[in-house]
Image (cartoon, rainbow, N blue to C red):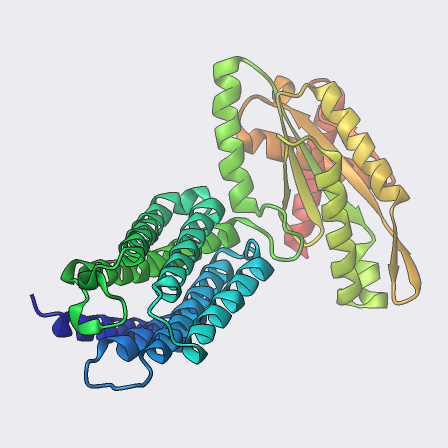
Amino acid sequence: METTPLILANVLLFALSAGVMLANAKAGGAMRGAVWFAGANLCRGAAMLVIGISWLRVEPLRMVEAICGILSMTGMLLLQQSFAELLEHKIILRKAQIGFAVVVTLILFYFVLFPSLSPVPGVVLLLALGILHGLVAVFVLRFSDDEMRPLAWITTFSLGGYALLLFIRAFARAYPDRSWSFVNASRLPPVWLLACLLTTTATAFGFMSLSAAKLKVELVWRAQVDDLTGLLNRWALKRTALREIQHCRRTDSSMAVVMMDLDGLKIVNDTKGHSCGDVVLQAIGGILQETVRARDSVARIGGDEFCVLLPQSSLEEAVQVAERLREEIYDLVIRYRGEVVQTQASLGVACSDVSGLQWQSLVEDSDAALYQAKRNGKNRVIAATPDGGQEAIQQAWSEERRKRRSE
């Protein structure tokens, strides 16, 4: 099989992959690391071109090997940078890898300045490229999220297999067999070029697939999270609550809901600006997340309204949590542009033991209790109860709803 067509196919594939990545990055801007990936492909394609085209005559031949080595190692470092940006993680052993590449480069140029028939430069270059390919493969698999793990295996397998071939080639180069010569491109084995072609295709496919999976995860996450506070939004809270209700029914356990409204946030917005109000909301969101249990869910469901979902909690336990939240918020001191901002909250609590194990009932009863707390002077906790107090709370809630409609 002729090797020249395979060499040209590799060069064209590197260039095509780079062009596709650059076009996607320019069009959408959503593919993290696309520019780095394009740069990596251009460097690796240039290395293949330099060492693979028989009519490109560069003397001495060791210079060809040195240029190819620098381009190839630069391409691999850029490839790892592209995956690092895509996966949003720092490169492992970055300084060690750069130092390793510099040492290999110095070795290659040493043999350029002092020509020798020793196979050492070729062996060192192949081992270095094999190690860099292996590191990229490990990096991709290690730092891919669970949602992207199946796609990460594609890239990892292709890069790992190519690294193994590089080690095999280094072994062959260490024992002079001219059919494995890395310097003379006209005698590069077809299997080697086919492996490079397949690896490049699989790596490009893996990168684009990981980018698409990453974008999907981010979109799903953004659809569930409040941008300002990082808490769940109303839609995500309801989905979580419905799952917890099913679990409570299977385990015959209780669930509580705490509805919370900040007292006086409108005054803060009017006197100090909405940017100050945003700072207050972010601080409150942090307090809520730090105070509740890991299995509890916290959401921002309105401008200054929050909701806490407490699975496997009785009414008494939920009231204790609500009191703790009220105290934490009351003691919270927020500094904004040299001024001290203090806030407080009113909270209403409902439990499935009283309201039943239906999401709408829990929300309505906790909301009614919240408005009763605000009518009773604010900065307090009121729980929905099955006695006359519950009736009063429901009445207060109904009055508040009528007032809202009239406004």
